[in-house]
Image (tube, rainbow, N blue to C red; front, side, top):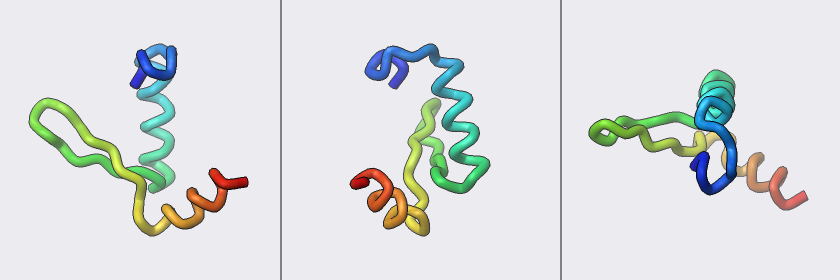
Length: 52
């Protein structure tokens, strides 16, 4: 993700942490990695926001 967005890994980590704290995303462990998903409860609002 940091390579795709040309951002430092610590910056990505900070933003993911904030999104998790606000219950916008959640993670699931997948071996030694974590996968992140949008919280289904906020997904419709996120899609509306992205379309504006």
